[in-house]
Image (cartoon, rainbow, N blue to C red; front, side, top):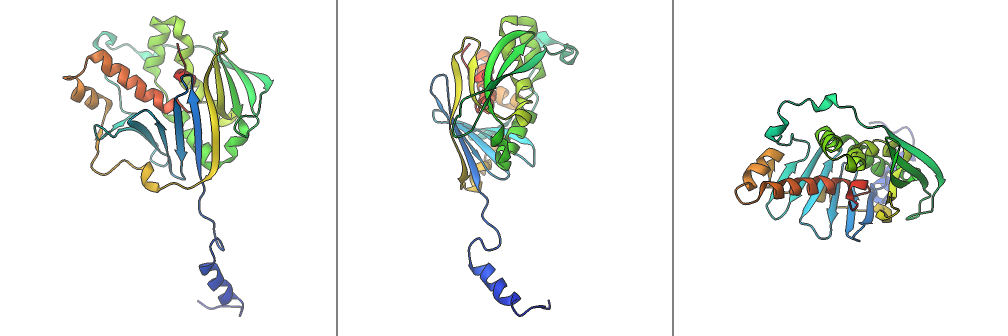
Length: 272
């Protein structure tokens, strides 16, 4: 390579020895929140993935942005469950075409400016399902300016669709219709902002972000499934644990794992 200026070589040397002279290190993000029971949830977000964990749980959820994968990692049982694998269908469902049942009508009504939360201005939206008030959301559009947070919200919206669960609630538990649309609400976050506070229809707080940091540093290993862990489907997890646990307990465990994915602000994490 030929240098065309006498000043080029000294500049190159300075770039190599001075931190940040060419590029700064990637800054990661952290979102901390509490649910209605004041349980602490922490979301660590890096350039290529995210980790969701609760202080009181041995299970955490890993998202890989590029692979578009979501795994629930059980550190006690030493396996990772593919959250996007098909769930085992109960025999009584037969060959029912779940996709043929249209979703309920969902509308987010803008109510005006909300309070500042965790350093971000919010917009107050009321979530209506078939005209029924379900939740009040306080969304922060400016938080989407952070690329890592934006990729996390997009990954969550793309990876939390469960048509079968939605239809079962619609058909068998109409009183829980608000719970049936939580995945549909997720789809609005990449456009309107991340949820910083959620109130249920009775005005009870079911989720609140307490801190957002956008200049954190994470070890890349925390976003990877540990070496030696088995990768299992939902069906394989059910089959493995079935001899030791009641089937209803296993289904509840599955629901809790799925709920953990959404506890960054999804209304499903609130009380019934």
